[in-house]
Image (cartoon, rainbow, N blue to C red; front, side, top):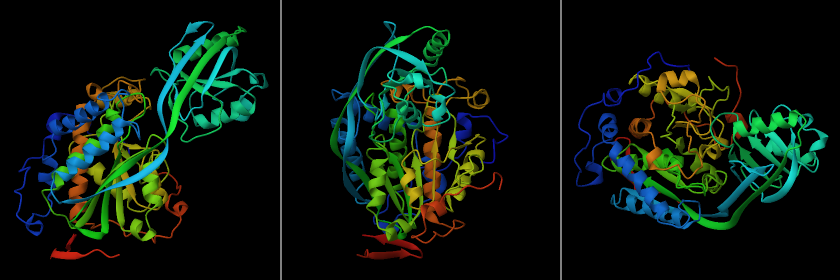
Length: 508
């Protein structure tokens, strides 16, 4: 990123600065539909539609006993049905595919922790292993537990107490387990509730639970003072094999050799309905897909609602792994939207040019980032570069060499004082204080970023739906992923086609 823009006023007036006719007339045939235009498409995105979609997803979750939308669950199956039926209601604008996928999934979990008989607030980790222990001493791990030498030999047979930060949870657990710890408790690095997160995949690591920063520091101080602190914990999850579907909608307009692809994951964790994570992204692209159906495009446009993201990006990974290199090479740009209405938000754009986090995406990632930067700046809205780490469904596309970009409003990162000065909110708390919890519901969505990000999505669709002018050509499809993602110094069966007009191709 280029840093912070000088304009910091974020107002509804800034968002509504664009005016114009938002709804083009529906034409009798596809070829007579008007070519997509930026202002009308952007202005056709309304908060009430986004919120209605979010409410529909919450209702789907709450209509089930589990009250969630976990991959493979009743809630998620009904989510897939909702997206499919909504897209089908648009007529024959999209070809709709349900791509089946089966994997392991956590359908339910239970956590409990006490120290010297006093119950403490705790949380579980996705893909954490089941474990129960009673009256087992706790041992402090030095620093952040990222290096093997941080873990004392005395942890053998005991429970490791580790601070969150710097390295992955997996690295901390690996180091503690190697020294013989029977379990680990990780306490948070901000006043944002118990530490929580994902271990990314099924593993053989020691059981782990999360603690609040206050409780972790208090326990660590007592241990440092020479006290023996005994702990008891129970952490279990019901993991089973489940089948669900990616929902993929492909426009029948546009050149199938030059594809704009947008995606968002459709599943939640088992703790709650997952309305910001990721009902917000899902509803953002669905609302744009509905609005786009009134227009034709020069580029083919695809939308996907990925399953099993919370199990490790598995739905998107399955799509990429089952696509040919030739088909992946037709994707000019993949745009990802995961958590675009966080209650303690900032406005983030994936750092495709590497100017903030020193890692670039494939050529074109930087161009898409600038498209978003310019759009927000024109509305006097400050944006920051989001870490381009492959943590969401764009990761498999990056690894396949597809240019990527996207928007987010923060997850379990901690908001800074400088960000509060720009966006308001609460410093020292997570961007989404309800991340992976039962409180991730409609009532806790931030409406302003929800709407402005959805309008930005529409802008990108209108821009690249019309033309790829100024966007770099794709690299050869057999180039390695490593060649496409590199460090650099900071600062520095054929389809039938019907031709509707010059560069306007309709695929049946």
